Image 1 (cartoon, helix red, strand yellow):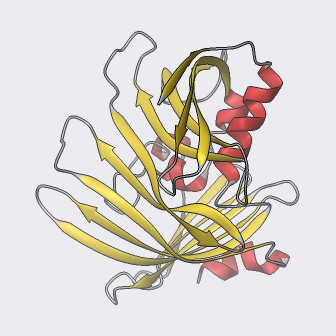
Image 2 (cartoon, rainbow, N blue to C red; image 1 turned 135 degrees about the vertical axis):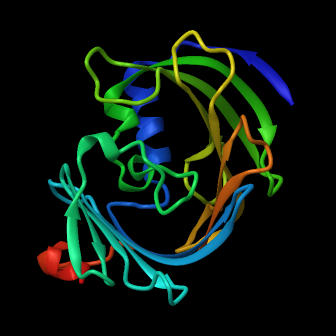
Length: 252
């Protein structure tokens, strides 16, 4: 590993890195099947999920539908623009989520509603500072540069975290996405030295003709034995969705 001092990189470039990293598993539109496993001190759960996303035009849209197990099958969460709705098949009711619920855990996991619905846009709501660049090899042995960025919220930005440290992988050659996320550490306040939680991207594998991280692990750092893990089973980019695919009728 070769350490290098942080070089001058424009805000536009840093913003583009964050934008690419945040969308590397979504693209402009995508359909994914994934498994989520939750490990907490008082319970363990596993879900099978289908996630549809469409950012080809405003407003952005996300639909998460639970495929299993049977107890949770049919539960769904829909985001269209800033409106987020939940559907419970047992009560057959649709509930609209208030902004105060964005930080709540999604279905008992360590991921928040905001994490999965992407209400916070790191590339838009934060400013950036490049702290360090490192020459290294990734888990596949490819030569890469790793960049560590500090993100600070812009004035009046509607965000939950006072500071975010974002580690990226910049591919120097070969096939694959040019920018990949590695780790995101979330700090409650700007002057905190200890992160409250950490999101790790790993298990690089071919997906849709690209080499992408297929595992996301979110850990609460004050509870080291707890985590939520998401594994991508299938992923298809450039899905051609219609308006009805993200309507409240699609929730049911």
